[in-house]
Image (cartoon, rainbow, N blue to C red):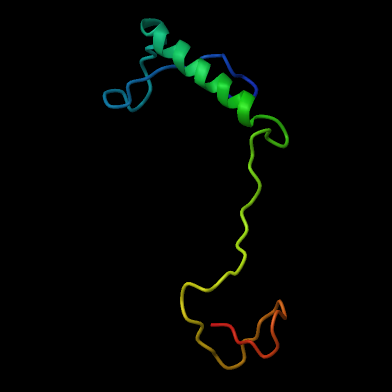
Length: 90
């Protein structure tokens, strides 16, 4: 659909199954598809565009995180975050 800030400007429509090199632009033959794709791009730009994106959800948190795999102690490797004394890293 074009570069950032170019919503609504068709960049081309190609049949990648038969034209992987994108040599034949089919946009003029399929204005309905261009209209639909342009509408979707405009909707996405309205929802998530901008700095910061308007619809970005906050990062998730875990109340009581637990490792998925058992921790195996190795001599000489300690926890750089100092979350627990004498904790060894795998």
